[in-house]
Length: 209
Image (cartoon, rainbow, N blue to C red):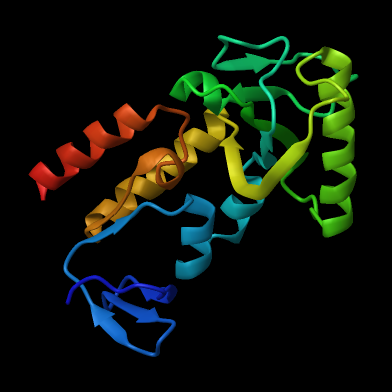
């Protein structure tokens, strides 16, 4: 009864400790734990436009690609970085190698500026470019068939750590904690860390509360 599905928070009043939900319900809380991206959280509470404008990050267009044959080149690798401006993607990863499967299933990551509008036409253009670059690199060949694919836009994807901005965010977190509001996780805390780090922080917070 305490878990709401297909429901989002539309507005937060930290002074009255009330959350207005998309279904019209108003929920009162004692402690508030935020794990959505900090910039999205600040939009909910309002009053932090200057900080929002200064928060730096990128978007990433992700293609999950499934082929009918194994890669002729990458038979053991889990992921590979591609440091080349001649290639539209900067990293590819291989689900099939991680899972011990034969047919190639992989992800491709393509970086964009935080202000970029990733439209359907851009997605189609990047997919064609990706397939061409995969052939050029030898990861796939022209005889392989793309069986299926999925598109995901990560927004934000990677936050950019800057010294002065971090100080402002740390000050904000302290102010929020005084109101029993905690913002944690890779995106909630606006940090660059591992899943394991986030799990440890969540455990520590649970014990603290």
